[in-house]
Picture 1 (spheres, rainbow, N blue to C red):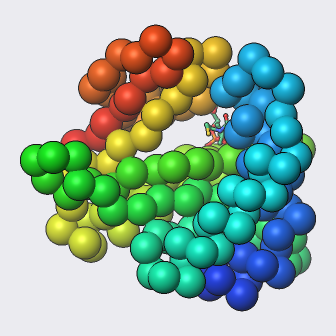
Picture 2 (cartoon, rainbow, N blue to C red):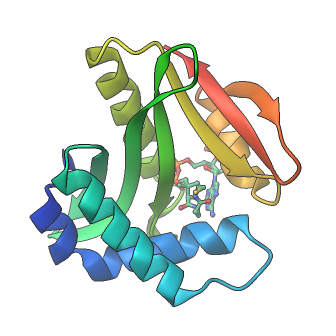
Picture 3 (cartoon, helix red, strand yellow):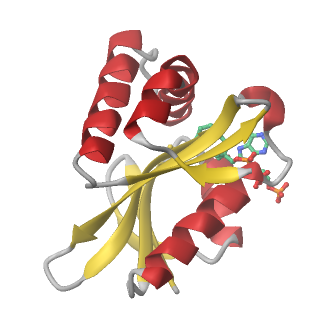
Length: 154
Ligand SMILES: CC(C)(COP(=O)(O)OP(=O)(O)OC[C@H]1O[C@@H](n2cnc3c(N)ncnc32)[C@H](O)[C@@H]1OP(=O)(O)O)[C@@H](O)C(=O)NCCC(=O)NCCS
């Protein structure tokens, strides 16, 4: 049910991905989401995937993309880690474990790449998502003005 998207598959699911970026933006920002921002994010993601610079895990049912997690390897100045850039699940399918499954795929992939940390940023106005990440083993790494960097030791 969860698979890695190729750049072509990401293009084919452009509309759903755009909607999910919209959800991310809406959940983490006080300003109204901007559809151009979402379209640009989809293009950026496809570009990353085309250059093998990122992974996009997707949860699909009946060829409909219901959730995704976009991750990339990142050097933090000391070590390489797996950074989760964006993740979202379609509104009508939340609370069924899809988000947790996507994040466990990120853990699995990080481990297979010999990385020992998964990292993500969560907005301070998105406590539900922060609660989920803490439940999955993430801990506060750095407190910023408008967001928190969370890390999970694998
Ligand atoms: C955060 C998110 C990806 C979780 O996906 P999910 O499939 O609902 O996650 P799961 O079913 O595995 O886990 C549900 C948990 O997430 C929490 N959660 C966070 N936002 C939620 C929402 N809008 N609806 C239901 N549960 C939500 C619940 O508290 C629940 O915890 P519980 O099991 O203790 O009750 C999803 O809610 C989402 O897409 N939110 C909007 C975008 C977003 O905030 N993305 C993350 C930052 S970019």
